[in-house]
Image (cartoon, rainbow, N blue to C red; front, side):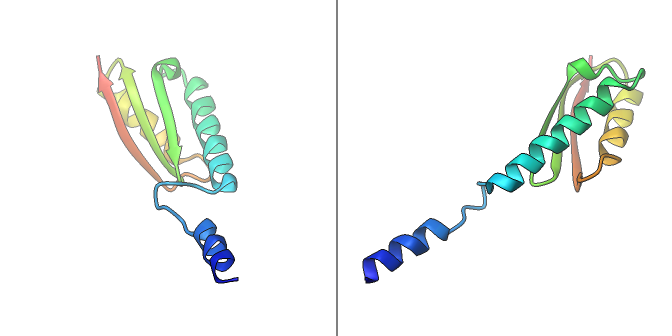
Length: 93
């Protein structure tokens, strides 16, 4: 009985670097909405911007043409529903 309880409790433990299925799906949806918004903006070349989301924090990476596009991409991402924070690692080429 004790070993079964310990196994059950071990299955419930959470690693801060892992996500539950619902959170992972939500992060995927956020990434998709951000990417779609970036692709729809004429000033940001969204095809050159990578978007990853972890627990509502969006990471932007890739290359853009000018500093204004760096700021614009971050602004677009911040406006997407579900985004808690934006980490902008875009590089001007």
